[in-house]
Image: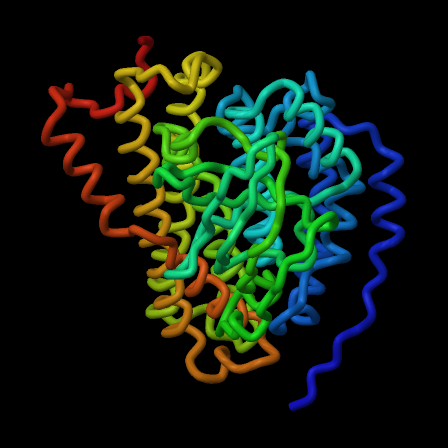
Length: 408
């Protein structure tokens, strides 16, 4: 079967968005035409090496590239260490519901701006905030194999990189990726590479996935790149500080829940189209899917509540340990685990509901299943849930583990 894709013109949407003043409440309303376009264009860009170029033009026009910046830097403060975390998670869920590839790339951008504002100097924050206002896309490329990145001091404030990163999401399109590398003493140092100012070697053949094709998550070799010390962010080891590292998982969990919700929508529409809505087994499966999606929403609300309570501490010194940190780490690991299970069950229930016919192109179900299956495979899954068990075994807790709704 030949799939016909109608041409989609994003320019009218972009012009409308650019003309609108943006506040947080406006942003969630303005996202609707963007997510509609992302969903409509998802099949067109579902190929290896593709990137959602038009989608990110719309995202930039709507002010979404700068929204994670603090208001001091011209943003809206949509970060995990702010009072608007619930709105950020809603935004990420909506984008993930429209296209998981777009959600994955945008979540990386949000993550990068979070790291800069947490560990960067005021001068660095100003520099990279300006870049975001210039529609530069940021990302976080931390995965690597045996040929991972090393950072060698050369003196006079210069550093030379060697080695490669894998799963470099947005390769060729992300302008300012965060990468981590080992210093000569083995310490892990974060830096930002201005990709338009240096020469790197990418390997597109490395990325031949079943799903998430449009993320262009290639392998990139940084050997020979020279960086100024102004590109080094924070102190060695900052990337792994808690709770900043683990608390951030709620961002990608929100995107994943959006993908599960999209699968629920597509399954329901498929059954309505073939008139199978009165089958009791289909009713039971869709009921279980609805239960999972709602559960995921409640987990995200719980995460937002925990992060909002922790907000004043986030604003403090990242080098200072706080007793509440591990409670937050454990809770966000529960959120991640619960939403992974919700996503996996949604895939299974959908597959049983639609059968072989529904899992063939051009149905969107086939692509969403591929994308969600791959995206759910985030690293260290077992260690994450084990850390929850370690926390509850070592902690003297009340009958309500995280004291929801109680004042501290």
